[in-house]
Image 1 (cartoon, rainbow, N blue to C red):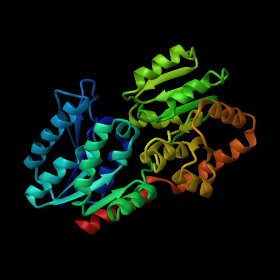
Image 2: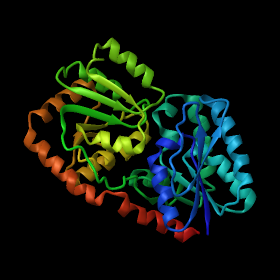
Image 3: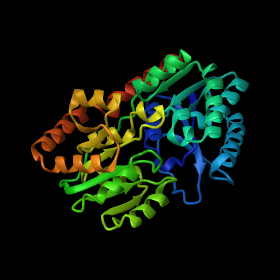
Image 4: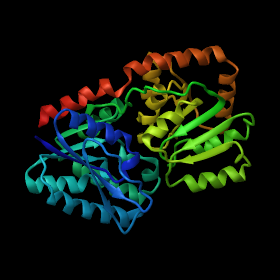
Length: 362
């Protein structure tokens, strides 16, 4: 039985994507281990069909964290037997490269992000230079890789002449959904990072007194957003639920009237993205507002499941949301289209590509 180690830098409890990937490969006959980090408030790990390991660090933010975690991860990988190590994104790729090279094993790169072009990276020149150097070093050495959308695959081909497979991050088919929709309720689910349109959405809430906003997730910008909601005097309209475990999240999301998949235009990462939440809303049968970027526009052209936003600012957002509320016929049509698209855009279909990818290289 082939053994594959997967490395991430996050807490494993909330990582639906990696849970799906490891479960699908375990079902296909591979022995999988998912390696992440343990935080002070980490919840007990769910019992799944693959091994899960969390490494505890003294540091949890900034350069000190990345340095410590990568060192710990490298020595942990050296202590394990494996046939392949799959590094998810640049922040765990170096230990995978050096450990797999030392053992003469296969390294795989899972580019869930265009990491060097994320807004929080490109907006800090010194940080950007470091990650770009790591990217350039590794991209000349990677032989096997896959990513989440055609946009990222195209840029990796253009910049590094690498052919990445595309395996989209779509959810498992949702069997149970809320029987009712809470009218004029808007939901965001995902990481609370810069450039996700949440600042603009909070500003838009000042123009939408009859609407409610629910933000599900944790991240470095959460405290700032809570303070902004108070300053804007919209705290009574906004509910911060924090992070929810995958099963809780699925049940919660389907209750809402409208979803948000918003990104700033800073950094190619956002403009080429294909976010998890886009598909999560579809699977929950929730129409959404998404940016008019290439990946979302292409899917919407095919399925008509979203309202595309040209310009990320509060006034444009508020106007669009009001227009949606005033046109229930179009809204219900998009909701029905979500129902149909959910049958196609599901992990049961996409996971076949994943299994075939690993079969070809192992």
